[in-house]
Image: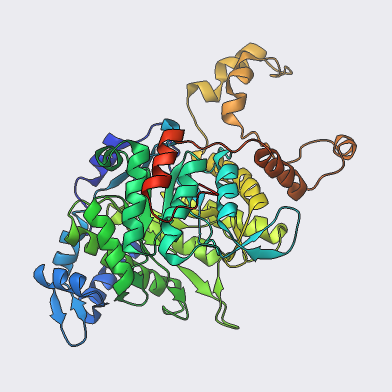
Length: 498
């Protein structure tokens, strides 16, 4: 019940053979998943969703939902909910400007990227935060482009030097100009969405080429927990769906504030709210590529503030990954943030633990996985480098231990015999780079060697890498002709940065 009958077959057909697959960590049993699903369906039928956008409200009414026009509450039975969910594809294909950055999001594939939207940045080597500017987004894009374990680029900061009218084109413009990975971002105005699509189409070659291989996807937080579809962001979700481009409908219930305090109840609220957003996209344009979105976390019960580095956030996003697979939907999951205000041990262990939990659970598209700290308020260039190392280790763990005749190496053991060594073995040379994660930031020198190079801390080594990248000439990925066309034809583009 609640699972697409052809889901497994479609996933097998579309699997990216080179991509690691998660799903080994399951905080929910099969029975738990069914119980959460059944409770969610009762919420749809007995409590309902308040739909604030008039056009969206009418779409639900026309689809056969029970509607209360005075309250704007929409109620649906399980049959209607699942009919709408089943219209959504089980795999969303995303593209970068470089072919190696193609992502097949769904099944148990695991990808991790940046996240946002932070208001502040921490300059390398400092402890003081300042308001983010568009030039900071450009620098972050250039650094992340060089990070091999960060798979996609979600717009990480809100530039304080941009007004709302022009922020969409400038945030997407800076990202598309200076790095080649797929770009995901939140949007603020319908006109901004349309202009971003025009810009991306210029880079892709045409609107048709963009739709076939989307370089951009959009985050529209249309659900406000508990059980409300927002007017403004509902309209933005519909705008993207009408264009047929990938859209994400995340929600962020917090245990003890906008959802009951228990993790299980939070997952029910999370499930209902994001499925309502998915249903809306399918009412607008059946087949719209859409992701189930989870940003669930907990509130600090001492003062009710949002927490981003809690282990419970990792657990709930892992559980949500199981729920998304139950519905045959790709998931936009959350992990990798820290509540620390500095790049210390807390910053590392909080990011590592939540990233590991959600990746092992098979979270498909893990955003916020790199660069964010201080309750998701601050982005750090050094932390992108440090988190890239964490993600390399995480993905090695997700890949697991390969057991076959060659990796068991019995014939090699026979050849070497008792008391021998494998240092010069061909088997060692063949497998050592594939079998082991080779760090580029972590220190594995002897104390003497470490001292001879100045005894640098992890943060200092990350700072040096940032300075090295930003010391290189800044060049745009799109051609000079395309960049000039963007500057001329897209209103509001900041020519000093883009």
